[in-house]
Image (cartoon, rainbow, N blue to C red):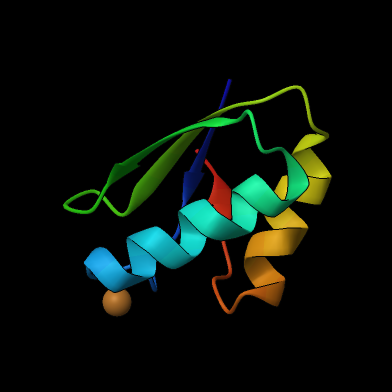
Length: 65
Ligand SMILES: [Cu+2]
């Protein structure tokens, strides 16, 4: 499980963009979004760096927390 802080994630549209981006890497990933904390919790077998990078590509810089 990994937790990412995604400061640009501010609304439901962002949340769905982030979720979709993660699922392009791992369709079976379990993604939990906390908009108030601007955090994403991801359960996935995919590589953490790959998941972080796909969010950057989607326009959402992030850091692990
Ligand atoms: Cu948004």
